[in-house]
Each structure stands twice: as structure tokens, then as C-alpha cells.
Image (tube, rainbow, N blue to C red; front, side, top):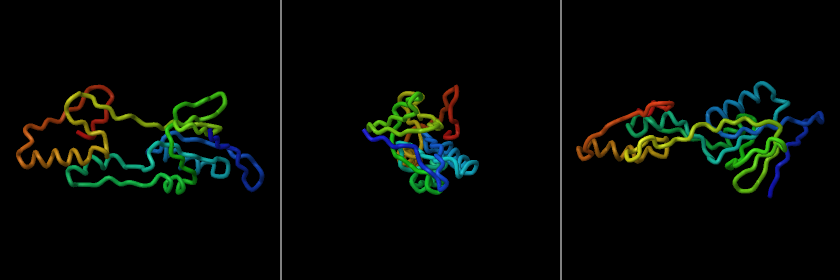
Length: 170
């Protein structure tokens, strides 16, 4: 089992406050930038995410229609630009008493504070029809739209379920 320590010293010998941000989407990256802006000499920031790339998801909606494309960036590069580090991994548990994040692969990361910026999980709302969940569905929807344009797709219906949803794809 690997354990990373959060004890780092600055040039004056002070212990830095290690903040682990679980999630490296928009909220996680904004939290990293805010921490660096507010306390650059006091905080050591580490982003954790199972994804190695950041996708600007709203533009994924335009890509199947040919009016935009998804932008992708390496999280290692974005974390470095935000003044932090990036660790790929899926957090399985947080031991708040010991201040340890347990990752799926068995490694552990000590922390002084945790920011949970996990975001939402895209889920299929209605069984059967195609659901647009983000960049991974762009090619499938592009193919569907091409079939409809060619006259072979039958009927096409767009629907948004009730409740707390992200209606922008519609």
C-alpha cells in the first residue's frame, strides 16, 4: 500500500496545508485556482480524478451537429498551470478521522482538507432510447443525425425527463 505524505515545507520551514480536491471538472479546477489565488504560499493543492483529461462538456452538444467541437486538455497540464499536482485515481473512501483518502488501486493520500467536487453522474433517464451523456456519445449521435438526414432514421424525438436534470443537450 502506497501512502503519500502531505508534509511539505516552504523555504521558511513552515508546514504547508495539503488540500486534496476530489474531482477535476470545472468545480475542481476552479477550487484549485481559488486556493492558489487566496493562499499561494500556504496551500499545497492536489487534484484527484479517474479521468486523465478535462473535457469542456457543453461544447460536446454542438459537435454532432457540426457547429463546434469538444476541447480536451491533459489534467496534469491544467493542474500544473493552477499551481497544483494531479493524481489519477478513483477515490473509494475518505477516512475523515485519519485524514486519508483511499484510492481504488490501494494507494492512500494524506490530507489536511478535502474539497468534494465530484460533479454529477450522467445516467440514462428513460430505458431504450439514446441518451446524450457527453463527449463519449458524440460519434453515436453524429451517426444518428446522419441517418435521419439521409431519410433512413425514421422519427426523431427529443425529450427531457422531469426533476433535476441538465436540459442543455435538448
